[in-house]
Image 1 (cartoon, one colour):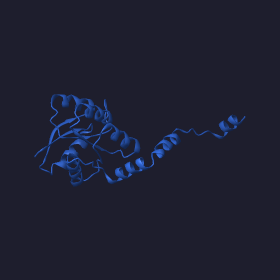
Image 2 (cartoon, rainbow, N blue to C red):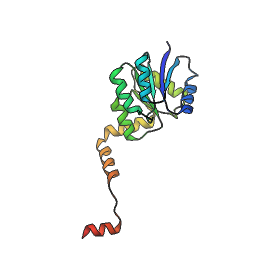
Image 3 (cartoon, rainbow, N blue to C red):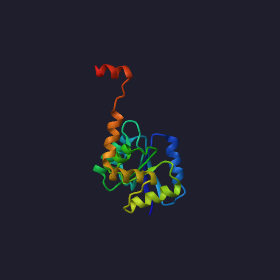
Image 4 (cartoon, rainbow, N blue to C red):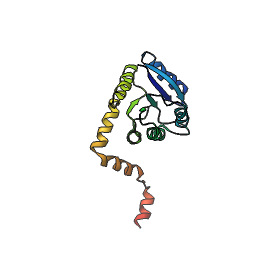
Length: 167
């Protein structure tokens, strides 16, 4: 069975690199590539016979998280693996909430990428180990995410500003 893949990726060199990584495996066929989420959705409207999408997160016009939400609502049978350089809590959490079936980093070697895609197609959830650990920590300590956001929003005042406030 040939697995049909769509690849939304705005960087041509990275897209070619991903295609090259998977060219070692005969069970994959790249059906089409898109420069952003909006273009991908347009292509899916014309032909949604795709098994899996390797979704970039940061793209112009429509990012991968927004595209994932729309695609999962319209084509729930299509599996989506986030394939990105971002391993921060917000992107991981937002991708999962959007309906992503897996989350792998672009640095993943060809064999692990191949295995991750097969895992997702078999009903599993492929994740890079560091992403899996972050996900577990988000589930174990959801209050940490809130505290981190609050701390990031804190404003630091100069000594003079603090003196004025004290008065």
